[in-house]
Length: 81
Image 1 (tube, one colour):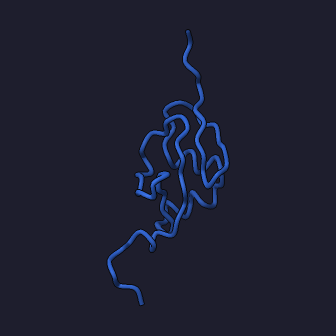
Image 2 (tube, helix red, strand yellow; image 1 turned 45 degrees about the horizontal axis):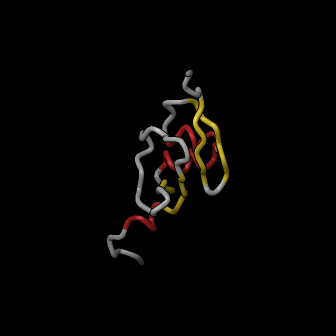
């Protein structure tokens, strides 16, 4: 049996198909390039379905759920102005 060449992930509720071995940033870029740019710039962050941060270089697994949030929301350092 051959393995699929693509995996399906969900970015902000939208399904995206990416090549097996693709990373979180690849999946986000497939969904919306401007959001991917914000992730790279550090103004946005990616979280998993539980709200825990995920690395942009983490490989995507089938059915992975990603949510894009404000990077500031994940800061949690109490320095809000």
